[in-house]
Image (cartoon, rainbow over the protein chains, first blue to last red):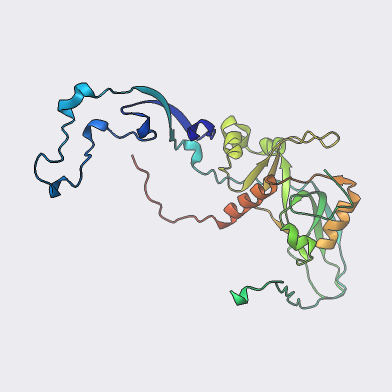
Length: 118
Length: 168
């Protein structure tokens, strides 16, 4: 099963007993309450009925100790938007002389493959 | 670890980068001699490698890096086990934890990238500093993309004025 390879710490394994065969692998539906004939209204009475309860002796529940996984929403998932004010590694006071003040000009970079033809 | 002849790429560690901080009262007129500070930071390059290689940017986006110990000294939450675990899991959007470096002669403890204090420094300056560094550390892919994505997540996050109340 794919779940064997899941290793996220946000995912916790739980034991889960399932009814049914391997063909229902991955499904945890209640076999006994499943309506297998949702279109039965279109057919005569008793044509497509399947009374599960009266056939219980023919049904062998396969109890498998499958490992299912469900995602947890731990408290840690709430973001901790904290801020630590750190001083610089080193600070030096400087005096500088302004030689020239000039207005900045845009630096235009034209992409090599513009998306104009798409 | 790369040699100083290698071009600067995203994820490179550049040490002791100067950031010029003019004082608030500085007069910016030609011929004046205002004062300011130069703060030095160890930084990691955040700009895209292709932009750096093709010289499509003049300024390099960098983020300060701190050792985990330095942050622990400053903040009680990070000092706690829960805080460190929160940081490791990436649930502190302003910070990104980098693993220990065990390369011989470049040993480093856990490092934390600070996304809140980004600086843009001239590319020639970054190149000069990295050349003087002899050897420098460089994050390998996919860790550098992971870092870049964490920064993007931090930058694009949206705080809602009224959130949907918690389900109980």
